[in-house]
Image: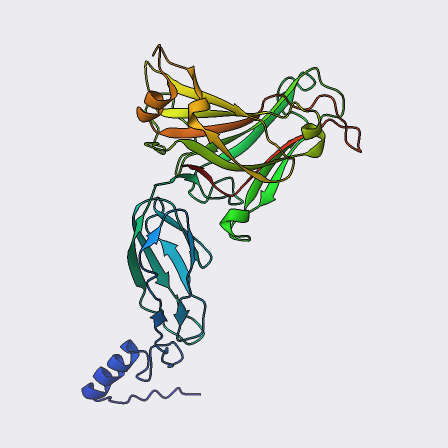
Amino acid sequence: MRQITTSVRVPAWLLVCSALLTACGGGSGSGADGSTATAQTITFTNPGAQVTGTKVALAPTASSGFGVALKSNTSSVCTISRATVKLWAAGTCSITANQSGGSGYAPATSVTHTFAVTGTSTVLFLSGFEANGTTIEKGGYSGYAGSDLDGWWCATDWCSSGGSYSPTVIDDDSNFYFHYSPTSKPGGSYVGMSLYAPGVTSVSTTANTSGVQVTNQTAMKLTLAENTEWFSTGKNGINITLVLGTRVNSCNMELEGTFTPTAAATTTYSVPLSSFTVSKNCGQTGLTWAPALASSPISQIKVDAKTANVSVQDSSLSYPTRITLTGSITFQ
Protein backbone atom coordinates (compact mmCIF):
# COMPACT_ATOMS: atom_id res chain seq x y z
CA MET A 1 0.00 0.00 0.00
CA ARG A 2 1.36 3.44 -0.90
CA GLN A 3 1.84 5.78 2.09
CA ILE A 4 0.39 9.25 1.57
CA THR A 5 1.96 12.18 3.46
CA THR A 6 0.15 15.47 3.86
CA SER A 7 1.32 18.78 5.30
CA VAL A 8 -0.55 21.68 6.85
CA ARG A 9 0.70 25.23 6.82
CA VAL A 10 0.32 26.83 10.28
CA PRO A 11 0.24 30.61 10.42
CA ALA A 12 3.18 32.17 12.30
CA TRP A 13 0.88 34.09 14.69
CA LEU A 14 -0.66 30.81 15.84
CA LEU A 15 2.76 29.31 16.64
CA VAL A 16 3.68 32.36 18.74
CA CYS A 17 0.42 32.27 20.68
CA SER A 18 0.82 28.54 21.30
CA ALA A 19 4.31 29.04 22.71
CA LEU A 20 3.12 31.83 25.00
CA LEU A 21 0.28 29.71 26.33
CA THR A 22 2.64 26.82 27.08
CA ALA A 23 5.06 29.10 28.89
CA CYS A 24 2.22 30.47 31.01
CA GLY A 25 0.99 27.08 32.16
CA GLY A 26 -1.60 26.51 29.46
CA GLY A 27 -3.10 29.97 29.65
CA SER A 28 -5.56 29.20 32.46
CA GLY A 29 -3.46 29.05 35.64
CA SER A 30 -0.07 28.25 37.17
CA GLY A 31 -0.53 24.56 37.92
CA ALA A 32 0.44 21.71 35.64
CA ASP A 33 -3.24 20.90 35.16
CA GLY A 34 -4.11 24.49 34.37
CA SER A 35 -5.29 25.32 37.91
CA THR A 36 -4.34 28.48 39.80
CA ALA A 37 -3.03 28.25 43.38
CA THR A 38 -5.02 30.34 45.85
CA ALA A 39 -3.12 33.05 47.71
CA GLN A 40 -3.02 32.93 51.49
CA THR A 41 -1.89 35.29 54.23
CA ILE A 42 -0.48 34.90 57.74
CA THR A 43 -1.86 36.74 60.74
CA PHE A 44 0.78 36.93 63.47
CA THR A 45 0.60 39.42 66.34
CA ASN A 46 3.84 40.83 67.76
CA PRO A 47 3.92 39.82 71.45
CA GLY A 48 5.66 43.07 72.42
CA ALA A 49 8.39 43.67 74.98
CA GLN A 50 9.12 40.75 77.34
CA VAL A 51 11.37 39.87 80.28
CA THR A 52 13.85 37.03 80.62
CA GLY A 53 12.86 33.76 82.25
CA THR A 54 9.31 33.79 80.91
CA LYS A 55 7.34 31.90 78.26
CA VAL A 56 4.82 33.43 75.88
CA ALA A 57 2.21 31.50 73.90
CA LEU A 58 1.94 32.61 70.26
CA ALA A 59 -1.09 32.09 68.02
CA PRO A 60 -0.25 32.71 64.35
CA THR A 61 -2.89 31.69 61.81
CA ALA A 62 -3.08 31.32 58.03
CA SER A 63 -6.12 32.26 55.94
CA SER A 64 -5.92 28.77 54.42
CA GLY A 65 -6.54 27.21 57.81
CA PHE A 66 -3.22 25.35 57.62
CA GLY A 67 -0.74 25.32 60.50
CA VAL A 68 1.93 28.00 60.70
CA ALA A 69 5.59 27.15 61.44
CA LEU A 70 7.54 29.43 63.79
CA LYS A 71 11.31 29.87 63.85
CA SER A 72 13.57 31.86 66.14
CA ASN A 73 16.21 33.88 64.30
CA THR A 74 17.98 34.70 67.57
CA SER A 75 18.31 31.44 69.49
CA SER A 76 20.71 32.90 72.06
CA VAL A 77 17.93 35.29 73.14
CA CYS A 78 14.76 33.25 72.54
CA THR A 79 13.79 29.76 71.42
CA ILE A 80 10.59 28.30 69.99
CA SER A 81 8.94 25.05 71.05
CA ARG A 82 5.78 24.45 69.04
CA ALA A 83 3.85 27.70 69.53
CA THR A 84 5.61 28.94 72.67
CA VAL A 85 8.56 31.31 72.80
CA LYS A 86 10.93 31.09 75.76
CA LEU A 87 12.98 34.17 76.66
CA TRP A 88 16.53 33.45 77.78
CA ALA A 89 18.64 36.57 77.48
CA ALA A 90 18.35 40.33 77.28
CA GLY A 91 18.46 41.60 73.71
CA THR A 92 16.26 41.48 70.64
CA CYS A 93 14.14 38.42 69.86
CA SER A 94 13.29 37.81 66.19
CA ILE A 95 10.65 35.26 65.17
CA THR A 96 9.52 34.34 61.65
CA ALA A 97 6.18 32.71 60.78
CA ASN A 98 5.93 30.60 57.61
CA GLN A 99 3.25 28.63 55.76
CA SER A 100 4.59 26.61 52.82
CA GLY A 101 1.30 26.10 50.94
CA GLY A 102 -0.17 23.00 49.35
CA SER A 103 -3.58 21.50 48.52
CA GLY A 104 -4.32 24.32 46.12
CA TYR A 105 -2.75 27.11 48.17
CA ALA A 106 0.39 29.06 47.29
CA PRO A 107 3.07 29.64 49.94
CA ALA A 108 2.26 32.58 52.16
CA THR A 109 4.54 35.58 52.49
CA SER A 110 6.48 35.05 55.71
CA VAL A 111 5.96 37.43 58.63
CA THR A 112 8.85 38.39 60.95
CA HIS A 113 8.44 40.20 64.27
CA THR A 114 11.15 41.53 66.57
CA PHE A 115 10.73 42.68 70.14
CA ALA A 116 12.88 43.69 73.09
CA VAL A 117 13.75 41.34 75.93
CA THR A 118 14.99 42.85 79.19
CA GLY A 119 16.13 41.47 82.52
CA THR A 120 18.99 39.37 83.83
CA SER A 121 20.43 37.31 81.02
CA THR A 122 20.32 33.55 81.17
CA VAL A 123 23.08 31.85 79.20
CA LEU A 124 21.59 28.90 77.32
CA PHE A 125 23.80 25.83 76.92
CA LEU A 126 21.03 23.61 75.55
CA SER A 127 17.24 23.80 75.53
CA GLY A 128 16.48 20.10 74.99
CA PHE A 129 17.26 16.91 73.11
CA GLU A 130 16.60 15.61 69.61
CA ALA A 131 16.66 11.93 68.67
CA ASN A 132 19.74 12.00 66.45
CA GLY A 133 22.36 12.53 69.14
CA THR A 134 22.24 16.31 68.94
CA THR A 135 20.64 18.89 71.15
CA ILE A 136 18.07 21.31 69.75
CA GLU A 137 21.00 23.74 69.33
CA LYS A 138 22.89 21.07 67.31
CA GLY A 139 25.47 20.32 69.93
CA GLY A 140 26.36 16.66 70.40
CA TYR A 141 25.49 14.46 73.37
CA SER A 142 26.28 10.88 74.39
CA GLY A 143 26.75 8.59 77.38
CA TYR A 144 29.57 6.40 78.66
CA ALA A 145 30.06 3.75 81.33
CA GLY A 146 32.21 0.82 82.37
CA SER A 147 33.57 -1.22 85.25
CA ASP A 148 36.27 -3.71 86.17
CA LEU A 149 33.96 -6.40 84.77
CA ASP A 150 34.08 -5.18 81.15
CA GLY A 151 37.56 -3.70 80.86
CA TRP A 152 36.35 -0.28 82.07
CA TRP A 153 34.38 0.28 78.90
CA CYS A 154 30.82 -0.49 77.91
CA ALA A 155 31.62 -3.56 75.83
CA THR A 156 28.50 -5.52 76.81
CA ASP A 157 24.72 -5.09 76.65
CA TRP A 158 24.80 -3.63 80.16
CA CYS A 159 24.66 -0.14 78.65
CA SER A 160 21.51 1.39 77.21
CA SER A 161 20.24 4.86 76.39
CA GLY A 162 17.06 6.53 75.24
CA GLY A 163 14.63 9.31 76.00
CA SER A 164 11.77 11.45 74.79
CA TYR A 165 12.81 13.82 72.06
CA SER A 166 11.83 17.11 70.45
CA PRO A 167 9.71 17.73 68.40
CA THR A 168 7.63 14.73 69.54
CA VAL A 169 7.46 16.42 72.94
CA ILE A 170 7.97 20.07 73.84
CA ASP A 171 11.55 21.14 74.51
CA ASP A 172 11.09 21.35 78.29
CA ASP A 173 9.87 17.73 78.39
CA SER A 174 12.55 16.27 76.11
CA ASN A 175 15.04 14.08 77.93
CA PHE A 176 18.00 11.74 77.55
CA TYR A 177 19.03 8.91 79.84
CA PHE A 178 22.07 6.66 80.04
CA HIS A 179 21.83 3.39 81.96
CA TYR A 180 24.51 0.97 83.14
CA SER A 181 23.46 -2.30 84.73
CA PRO A 182 26.13 -4.97 85.28
CA THR A 183 24.72 -8.38 86.15
CA SER A 184 27.47 -9.12 88.67
CA LYS A 185 28.65 -6.92 91.51
CA PRO A 186 31.47 -4.74 90.16
CA GLY A 187 34.51 -3.76 92.17
CA GLY A 188 33.98 -0.27 90.80
CA SER A 189 32.18 1.41 87.93
CA TYR A 190 31.53 4.78 86.31
CA VAL A 191 28.56 6.27 84.45
CA GLY A 192 28.23 9.65 82.79
CA MET A 193 27.12 11.89 79.96
CA SER A 194 28.92 14.29 77.65
CA LEU A 195 27.07 17.36 76.38
CA TYR A 196 28.32 20.00 73.96
CA ALA A 197 27.64 23.68 73.40
CA PRO A 198 25.53 24.83 70.42
CA GLY A 199 27.01 23.65 67.13
CA VAL A 200 29.85 21.75 68.86
CA THR A 201 30.30 17.98 68.61
CA SER A 202 33.84 17.63 70.02
CA VAL A 203 36.53 19.68 71.71
CA SER A 204 39.52 20.29 69.45
CA THR A 205 42.95 19.19 70.64
CA THR A 206 44.74 21.63 68.34
CA ALA A 207 42.64 24.82 68.23
CA ASN A 208 40.14 26.82 70.27
CA THR A 209 36.57 25.48 70.38
CA SER A 210 33.48 27.66 70.47
CA GLY A 211 31.01 27.56 73.34
CA VAL A 212 28.83 29.68 75.62
CA GLN A 213 30.35 32.55 77.58
CA VAL A 214 29.44 33.05 81.22
CA THR A 215 29.70 36.68 82.37
CA ASN A 216 27.80 37.71 85.49
CA GLN A 217 25.86 34.46 85.97
CA THR A 218 26.28 32.78 89.35
CA ALA A 219 24.69 29.31 89.06
CA MET A 220 24.23 26.39 86.69
CA LYS A 221 20.67 25.06 86.42
CA LEU A 222 19.76 21.56 85.26
CA THR A 223 16.95 19.03 85.74
CA LEU A 224 17.97 15.50 86.66
CA ALA A 225 16.61 12.15 87.86
CA GLU A 226 18.24 8.97 89.20
CA ASN A 227 17.04 5.38 89.44
CA THR A 228 15.74 4.43 92.87
CA GLU A 229 18.33 1.68 93.51
CA TRP A 230 21.27 4.03 93.07
CA PHE A 231 19.55 6.84 94.99
CA SER A 232 18.88 4.49 97.92
CA THR A 233 22.61 3.81 98.39
CA GLY A 234 23.10 7.30 99.78
CA LYS A 235 26.14 7.56 97.54
CA ASN A 236 24.30 9.21 94.68
CA GLY A 237 26.32 12.39 94.24
CA ILE A 238 26.79 14.02 90.84
CA ASN A 239 30.03 15.44 89.49
CA ILE A 240 29.83 18.22 86.90
CA THR A 241 32.84 19.08 84.76
CA LEU A 242 32.97 22.26 82.68
CA VAL A 243 35.46 21.98 79.81
CA LEU A 244 36.67 25.34 78.52
CA GLY A 245 37.18 25.88 74.79
CA THR A 246 40.18 28.24 74.80
CA ARG A 247 43.44 26.33 74.72
CA VAL A 248 46.16 27.39 77.17
CA ASN A 249 49.62 25.83 76.91
CA SER A 250 48.17 23.28 74.44
CA CYS A 251 45.56 22.32 77.02
CA ASN A 252 41.86 22.87 77.83
CA MET A 253 41.16 23.95 81.40
CA GLU A 254 38.43 22.21 83.38
CA LEU A 255 36.33 23.14 86.41
CA GLU A 256 34.59 20.62 88.63
CA GLY A 257 31.62 20.91 90.95
CA THR A 258 29.58 18.38 92.96
CA PHE A 259 26.06 18.21 94.31
CA THR A 260 23.87 15.49 95.81
CA PRO A 261 20.34 15.06 94.39
CA THR A 262 17.63 15.19 97.05
CA ALA A 263 15.17 12.94 95.19
CA ALA A 264 15.23 10.10 92.71
CA ALA A 265 12.40 11.73 90.74
CA THR A 266 12.94 14.46 88.17
CA THR A 267 14.04 17.57 90.07
CA THR A 268 15.55 20.90 89.06
CA TYR A 269 18.81 21.88 90.76
CA SER A 270 20.75 25.13 90.90
CA VAL A 271 24.46 24.55 91.44
CA PRO A 272 26.43 27.65 92.55
CA LEU A 273 29.36 28.39 90.28
CA SER A 274 31.28 29.45 93.37
CA SER A 275 31.28 25.79 94.43
CA PHE A 276 33.36 24.85 91.37
CA THR A 277 37.13 24.51 91.56
CA VAL A 278 39.70 24.49 88.77
CA SER A 279 40.49 20.78 88.44
CA LYS A 280 42.74 21.14 85.38
CA ASN A 281 44.66 24.42 85.32
CA CYS A 282 46.95 23.89 82.30
CA GLY A 283 49.80 25.54 84.16
CA GLN A 284 47.75 28.52 85.36
CA THR A 285 48.44 28.31 89.10
CA GLY A 286 46.25 30.09 91.64
CA LEU A 287 43.32 30.38 89.23
CA THR A 288 39.80 30.33 90.70
CA TRP A 289 36.41 29.72 89.10
CA ALA A 290 35.50 33.32 88.23
CA PRO A 291 38.60 34.35 86.24
CA ALA A 292 38.73 30.90 84.65
CA LEU A 293 35.16 31.21 83.33
CA ALA A 294 35.77 34.81 82.27
CA SER A 295 38.78 33.72 80.19
CA SER A 296 37.02 31.18 77.97
CA PRO A 297 33.67 29.89 76.73
CA ILE A 298 32.33 26.56 78.01
CA SER A 299 32.43 24.02 75.18
CA GLN A 300 31.51 20.81 76.96
CA ILE A 301 29.74 19.71 80.14
CA LYS A 302 30.20 16.27 81.66
CA VAL A 303 27.63 14.94 84.13
CA ASP A 304 28.91 11.88 86.03
CA ALA A 305 27.92 9.64 88.90
CA LYS A 306 30.32 10.50 91.73
CA THR A 307 30.00 6.89 92.89
CA ALA A 308 28.01 4.49 90.71
CA ASN A 309 25.81 1.82 92.25
CA VAL A 310 27.75 -1.28 93.29
CA SER A 311 25.59 -2.42 96.22
CA VAL A 312 21.82 -2.36 95.56
CA GLN A 313 20.27 -4.82 93.11
CA ASP A 314 17.08 -4.43 91.11
CA SER A 315 14.48 -7.16 90.45
CA SER A 316 16.71 -8.69 87.75
CA LEU A 317 19.61 -8.91 90.25
CA SER A 318 21.64 -6.32 88.36
CA TYR A 319 23.32 -3.23 89.84
CA PRO A 320 21.79 -0.34 87.86
CA THR A 321 22.88 3.28 87.65
CA ARG A 322 20.82 5.62 85.49
CA ILE A 323 21.13 9.37 84.93
CA THR A 324 18.30 11.20 83.15
CA LEU A 325 18.53 14.84 82.06
CA THR A 326 15.37 16.71 81.11
CA GLY A 327 14.94 19.99 79.28
CA SER A 328 17.43 22.84 79.39
CA ILE A 329 20.83 23.44 80.94
CA THR A 330 21.44 27.12 81.65
CA PHE A 331 23.69 29.50 83.56
CA GLN A 332 21.78 32.12 85.53
